Amino acid sequence: MSEKYPPTLYEWAGGMPAFERLTEIFYQRVKEDSLLAPVFATMVPEHPQWVARFIAEVFGGPKLYSGERGGHAAMISHHLGRKLTPEQRTQWVRLICECADEAGLPDDPEFRSAFVAYIEWGTRLAVS
Image 1 (cartoon, rainbow, N blue to C red):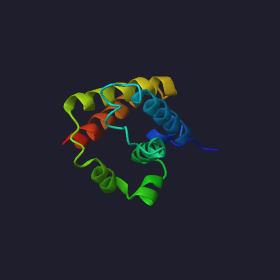
Image 2: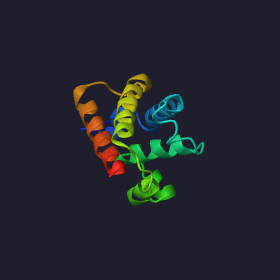
Image 3: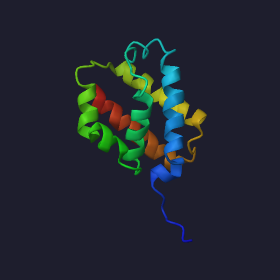
Image 4: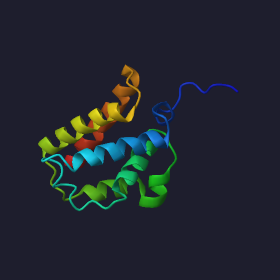
């Protein structure tokens, strides 16, 4: 079997199970976070799975989010009018990066650089 090089970020992370672990850990911690809990108070139980599918798709995984939820434009529309503050954005980034460690995502500099770059970019879009 020939090895594909370089792997997608999705493959490098460990596939869908890695992103599902990440979002499950993250949203459990969000419930306990005084700054973020109010933002997600009305979150439906499927929300962590949807976020896992979205991030996985962005990183080269299957297009499950697009097929089920409408893709990037739909994700942005879900965040319109939320009036997220810069402090909430910063906390979201900090917390998901901590949870990436706990979820066992790769900790090498190349993977984390790409991961953090996307998280920074995506959260700045959500605030604006």
